[in-house]
Image (cartoon, rainbow, N blue to C red; front, side, top):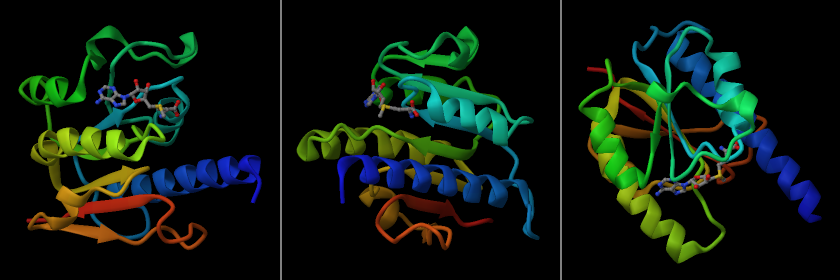
Length: 174
Ligand SMILES: C[S@@+](CC[C@H](N)C(=O)[O-])C[C@H]1O[C@@H](n2cnc3c(N)ncnc32)[C@H](O)[C@@H]1O
């Protein structure tokens, strides 16, 4: 597969999984709505942030990144942006956010496997502490700490996404 095809598949999987998780937390298709905010972990150029605000227009989205490099049209307001290392900014935000997270999207893979694993390991514990009952996590990387945590279930991707391309988890409802 060419690198172009691979990039297109990754973006299609990302969009499909975000849509799937949004449907679940909104209760579209039968389940109960999950109250809470949305966390975008990895603003980058703002592509998925822009998509999240389109598919979840009634949710407040808090955004995390080391630096602000997004397209000017895809920047959150200052009071919804946490700049710095997520291992530090997530606990700081947790004490200030108005509600736990109904949905968190992680897009923080760097292409370097050991570095990405270290990065993920620093982000998972504070993220876990911020997740609402019934809340969803959508990630470009597998999340081993979440997968091992009591009360967290791996969720299969939507049918159009191959297993192992994008990763979804859900905290059990109380
Ligand atoms: C792949 S880009 C995100 C792309 C974005 N979702 C989009 O659609 O445009 C990853 C971003 O995560 C940020 N990032 C990765 N690890 C981080 C960490 N530990 N703390 C803060 N930001 C981090 C990087 O600075 C980078 O901007």
